[in-house]
Amino acid sequence: MEQLNSTVVTSNISSSPGLPPPVSWDSSKLVPAVVLSLCFLLGVPGNVAVIILKPNWQHLSGLTQILMLNLAMSDILSLLPLPLWIYSFVYSWIFGLVACKLVTYLEYCSLYCSLLTVTVLSVQRYLQVVHLRVVSLQRCLHQVGKWLLVVLWLVAMVLSTHALVVRQTTTDQHRTLCQSQYSSRPQRMAVLLAESLYFPQLLLWAQAGFSLASSQQRKHPFLMRG
Image (cartoon, rainbow, N blue to C red; front, side, top):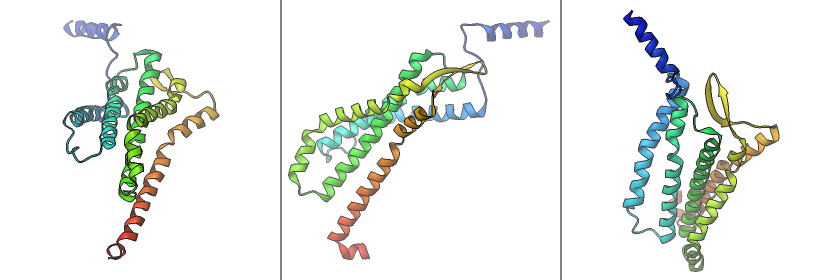
């Protein structure tokens, strides 16, 4: 009798509309949730500490400091929605279609801005080392620092607009998911093209590193040969 009562209570709790669905212990859902939890617990305090403490920034230029702050801020913005994704992996997406689109848009926008900021930092470092004597170029970089951040965020916002179009809520095995749904093959190809921004940046970093190495070799040929 006692076992029957406990079974009835358990079934009533699991069927209550105000409570979340039972936890899914599927490894395909649990592993991403654990990884995202670690990223959130380590990433948010780390980036906040960088913004507050600014370690060893005294010797950096004003533009470099602005870019570093922007990088930390964009990383924080990309990490803040992680609890929502963790909940959706373990339970279900219960936040609606609008939140699905906006949260995904914020994620993409922050990630694109982080990548663009790292690219600008690499280019700036290359110009400082290779073209150190070009004073006018250095002054120009310092003058356009704040406007450069505006341009970076605008470009990131434009590149992230596909998330507002393709992100939809779907139902799969009594669970609501927030994922991309493509209406046609050209749309899918366009989104993949927008997400392929990573590859040109790798080429840009490689080209900057090759140019820097070539410049150092011309200045110190004997050291490079040794």
